[in-house]
Length: 391
Ligand code: NDP
Image (cartoon, rainbow, N blue to C red):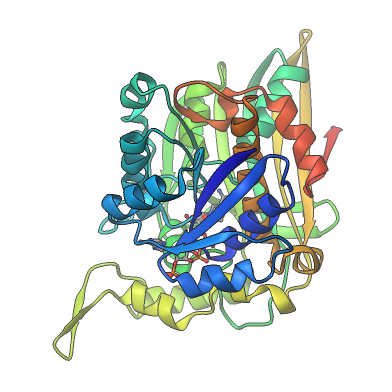
């Protein structure tokens, strides 16, 4: 039985700790740590078995090192914010513990995310015989694994992929984000970026959109965005010519976002307010609902999947694989909404496969670089069944 340290007690952290607690044969001892220990304690009280909780400011690698030395985990699962990725990876190196996260590093003062900062740790992790698994949520995470699974079982070569993320749920608030508001708004307001015929192309933010008829949901407008898994998939899927990422948004959400942008509330540079330096987006985060608070009234479903085109036995083939998740069902099981659930379950499965030794090699890896079969089997087993069709 192994020991896991989970850092971050927000919406996703809540799901991860519930799901790990449901698998005692792998996760023998659990410690949940976050900046605000009261949030960890609140989550611990919802569980059927005792866990340890701790306060940690993960921006400070020394605090993470001290906590690791005290708890002695076999793995650190980071579901705090992307800002903490590098300090937690440093602490893992110093203490000789493997690492997993769900979102790639972002520098706090530039709205930019890419894997280069974390991939740069490859030689040090290899030398220390440690493993880091990056981006093991749903997208990135399962989206990458869906493509690896398609390549292993259904294609000789994959040429085109559309990753399509639809949330058709309703939380009853005028405006809220489904994961950390700061990270979410930074991502959505970026320029669109996609890979077409072997070259990267850019668009104005959310300027390209089309309707798609999502199974179990119906037709929704989806918008082209840049998303981090595109970067690793272009490198790791041989023969891939084109890949795009799409996400659905309602008109109400887009109108709120446009107004917030127009009045300067999404700025990430500090402004002087009555003698204090305030970052408008951080202030906005403080007044918006926390993602972990949305679950109770959430109804409706998510559908996230990949439309994949390529060639099998000399013939063109189109394959669509997706998961549908119901917000209210998630709340019934783990007191969380489906966005947190679809992120937290894959993070638990990635950790499980690492601790079981099924996914284990020293270095820094993305999820498409491992055998997808045990992961796909566990997805269906632990709450995220998937559907595949040939079109
Ligand atoms: P929340 O804002 O709900 O939770 C973040 C948690 O991290 C909070 O509990 C916060 O603590 C804690 N935290 C923040 N800073 C620190 C710090 N310096 N030290 C310790 N703890 C800290 O966000 P979510 O749970 O919605 O998202 C968590 C992560 O999951 C994000 O990185 C997000 O990008 C990623 N994600 C990935 C997805 C995927 O599919 N791959 C999808 C959705 C999210 P406190 O409350 O005390 O501030």
